[in-house]
Length: 250
Image 1 (cartoon, helix red, strand yellow):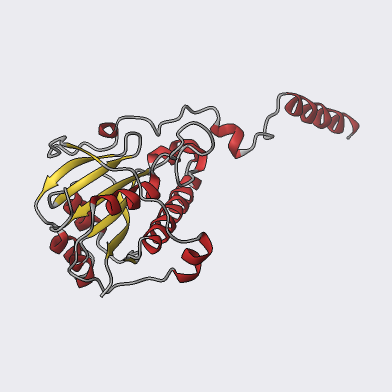
Image 2 (cartoon, one colour):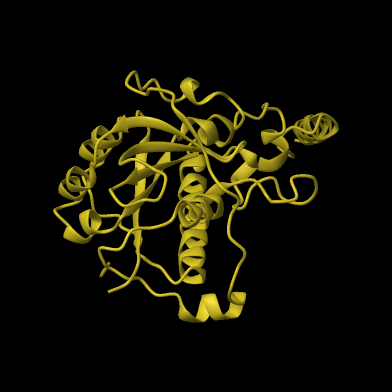
């Protein structure tokens, strides 16, 4: 019995010395190189993108206090036929996941992400009436604050059809769709990473809510849609998580 106890204590001592079982999730994640700066084509093999690049204007200055935006934020589904300015679109996309305005210190993006993996791609489904922007599907590039054209034509009706025929999606001048590439996070954290991706989508959608409120616009987070049909509309290989129609209020 004493011999067995001595051997057990020796094994524990050796394991402790080498740190086996003592690493946290964060420490294990440090072994992986960041993948958030990989080119989009690594995660999206869309063959129909025409690579037209559209520079966006600087995000608009905030007009309300944070407390006002938090207090007044509600989900809105009734949109007028009035279009949006490119500056408004720019502000919404930047809030969802752009680079901070100073670009030097502090956060690297406007929304946090587990391990800095940033598994979300931000897609814009634009209708007619957007100042300086043709109707179509676009992918947002946070690093240079631009849009890359993915497909032409007004696809809001198709997007609404993929979302159980929720008509307000087609009525809103734009829809922002959060698309996940789970492997960016799960390759670091395993199955637990799936939860982190969904948390990231929550951060981004709340930012869109708050920016919309600040611009006197309405939005709502929509999760009821057919995953495959919505991905087909966007021509994306990723997994759509949320559709957020945005527009002026009736």
